[in-house]
Image (cartoon, rainbow, N blue to C red; front, side, top):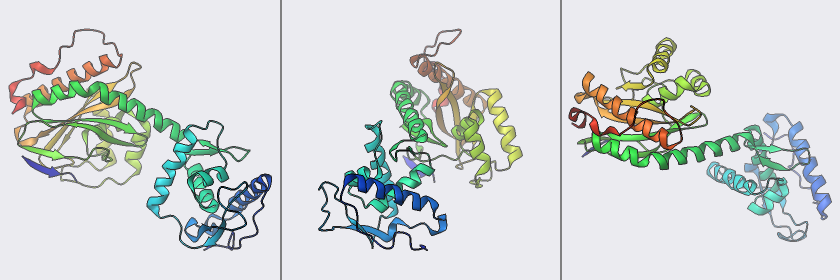
Length: 341
């Protein structure tokens, strides 16, 4: 089987005044520090890369009111910062009352200055929120993303047996795609039996303008639609749609037809077919993607694949609790043998 690979500081915090020893004193110090950072122009705000916390014998770690001192040196790398973001989220999940920067700093073993910088970025991104009492809690974007992830994983578990059968019957690679905030990604894959397959990484962000599932979600989700037209749209192949006029017409056609097709727009030789999966409220929560080879595609095969994908989609929707008005759903077993190669 052949596999195709898809493709400076103004002086703020430069001096380290003696830290207060009492708990209330530390809170006041923390409050003043936050206020100073907020009042400083963004270009002059200190970077956490300039500060680390050294052990101060007067204030050992773990002691009541203990803390280190901010000194110049090596700070967090970009990778460390990303990892620490998730560490902060894990801390806040179990604390609906929130935590202060000092508490977060101690639990993660981070310098207080680095914690403030990281938390400020997270507040700006609405990943965490900062209350008037200087306690940090989960922000709206984190909560929304968590809900979407749980919903996506539920769909994945329910859809699995139906998509396995769809791959068996059609012989083509089948993918399950779900939206994550402002992007779309595949979360499951079921290999077919064709001699050539396309290797697309699970979790990888998909092009909204060039993939069938990307276009499908952009056609039905205003946030994704805005992102499609606001970001760069690279010409991946000679068939890729890139102009606003082309894509506006394509999205309108997708809404009318109820499915999306990418005809060698992302990868030469590959046609992508996407059909929606909706929950009991009618919301688009996932999509089935069939990855078929263009050299065996004609109108009849395309119609058969669409019918099979829609049937699998209705089966998944039924298991999600969505009721369909008419007809029984028996599965994709009746697909024309031409679609299986």
